[in-house]
Amino acid sequence: MFVGTFEHSLDDKGRVVLPSTFRSYVADRGFLSKLDGCLGLWTPEEFETVASLLRDRVREGQVSSDALRVFAADAAEVRPDSQGRISIPQRLRDFAGFERDLIVNGRLDRIEIWSVDRWNDVATTADQNLADAVVDLGI
Image (cartoon, rainbow, N blue to C red; front, side, top):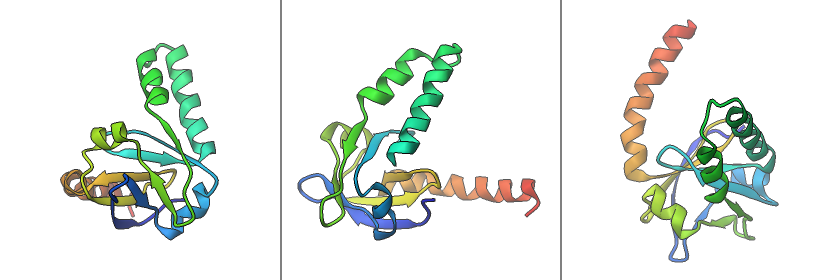
C-alpha cells in the first residue's frame, strides 16, 4: 500500500525522485498514466488490474473505447534509476501542469504525482470529503 505525502522537485531533465518508501514497489518498472489532473504511477500488477477493468467496462458498453485507447496510448513504462528517479515524458508533464515543485503521494493502490498548485486545489475539498466519509462510516 502506498501512503504518505512528499514534496519533491522535477529536475531539468524531467525526472523526479520517488520517495524511498515507494521505490521497492516499482524498482523493476512501473507505469505512468494520466489521471484526474495528475499522473498515476502503478506497479505492473495494478496497471494490469486497471486496464482489465477498463476493458471490461468497454465490452459492457459502460465506457467509451476512447477511454481505454487514451489510457494505453498516453501511458509510459518507467524504470527508476540508481538514485530512485523516474523520467516523466514531456506530454505527461504538460498534461499534469508540472513546473518544478511536485507533490508525490500514496493513494493505497497507486502513487499520484501532482503539481503543487493542483494538489492544493484538491486537498481542501478532499479534507472535507474525508471528514464526511469518516462520519458516514461511523469511525
